[in-house]
Image 1: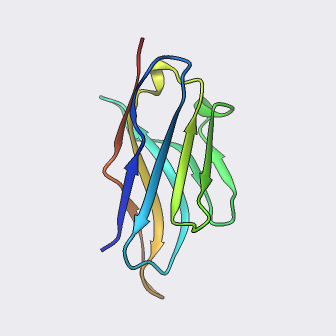
Image 2 (image 1 turned 60 degrees about the vertical axis):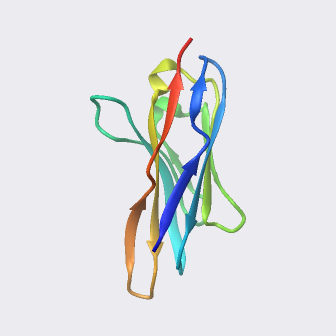
Length: 120
C-alpha cells in the first residue's frame, strides 16, 4: 500500500516561513513528478508547485519568487519551502505524486493534507 505523508504545516504570521515535507512509502518502483496543491475553504483545489524526477519545476504565478520545491536524495520525498507567507496562502496543502508500483501500474496518489494558516 503506497502512502504519502505530509508534515510541517502550522500557524504563522504574515511574512514568516514554513517548510512542508512529504514522504512516499510502500512498494514503489519509481516516482514521476511530485507536487503540492492547496485548497482553501469554498475554493477549488489549485496547483502550487511541481517537480519532475529530473528536477524541472513549475510554480503557480501567485507563489513564484516566494516558494521553492525540491526533492530529497532518495527521490521519494518532496519539500515545499514557503517564504514571505501571506494570508491568502492559508489553505490545506496536499502532496501529490505519480507513482509506478509495477511495470504497467501507475497512478496518482494524494496525501491527507496539512493545514497552513497565515494570520496576525
